[in-house]
Length: 85
Image (cartoon, rainbow, N blue to C red):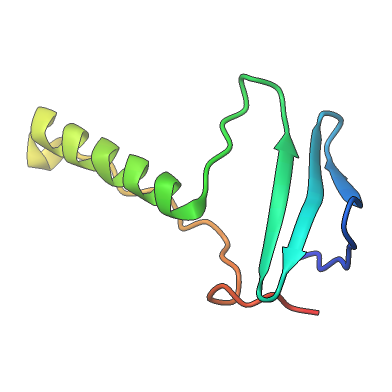
């Protein structure tokens, strides 16, 4: 995992077309802005997990149990919501 320090209004670039900007810092919250092409999905982790739980339920109900594929590998996570410095 790459760990970076940024101040308000500073940003990082991911690939050629994704920009993450520190919009605001308040006490223990950091607000981030994400600029990405429309075709790149950007979700909070809990929304991402909910979407994928729904897809698993749909695929499980539409496929016989013997042909279900294994679940995808887990994504890397942050240290339980704590920012590493």
